[in-house]
Length: 74
Image (cartoon, rainbow, N blue to C red; front, side):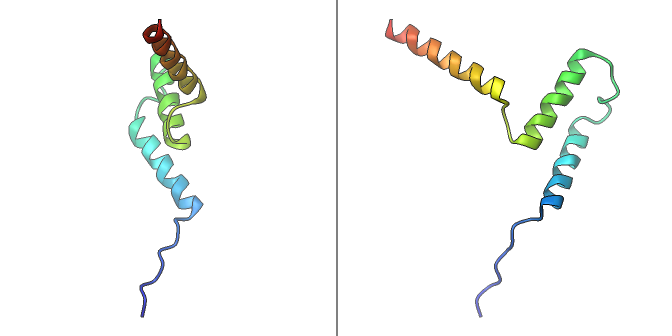
């Protein structure tokens, strides 16, 4: 008898796990009024929910690579 296939996790369970990770990483920081804390909370939330760098960060990274390649060429 072949082994049973493991089904993919449910979307709700994945979202709950992501929320739990966000809560753990930002514990006690959500109610702070400082700009740096709020930016950190937003950054962590985006990383966990959307799986990594935002489009702005990707664009900046590409620009840095282009500048570095231009410096090497010239």
